[in-house]
Length: 117
Length: 113
Image: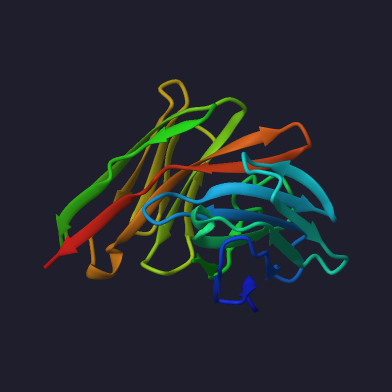
């Protein structure tokens, strides 16, 4: 079975530009969460989407937005990029939104490495 | 708010046992999970504790004490490939009937021959 896939793997942008990152969850998983991981830190929660609805939002500015499509894939959009947005962006999928562990665990994709110059 | 504390670095030798501690302060807590992440890789789920006590999965075990807001990951029979970063993450309920994971900053484990 294919795991969580993300594209692109690497991306270089300049300040002020916008970026769209894509994620395809594991087949059958209906929930997608996005995380930002800055070097030397743990992943920080950005969004969770379940059944195409936003179920959770972390402490990120409105420049960050996301959506989930009918096939449960998801996009993360970041506008007006800042140098501080340089990070590894991780997508995680799970069966449902509750992340109760065991069969309902979240599985991470390989991430998109975003560099803002 | 939520906060988790874990040691930044731990070093051990092959074959040894190492314990990585995690203390947390959070609201809406319903579980503690552990992830492993190799350099440049994705976090990989190791274990999850919803109830107090010890969960064992092969060479890895995880413990939770809800009353002490404390947990640990125990790695036995260390191998060189266990060199990685280890994150504890608190699971919290959201009002939207969803769950959210808040991660610690990770513990870098170095296994030496």
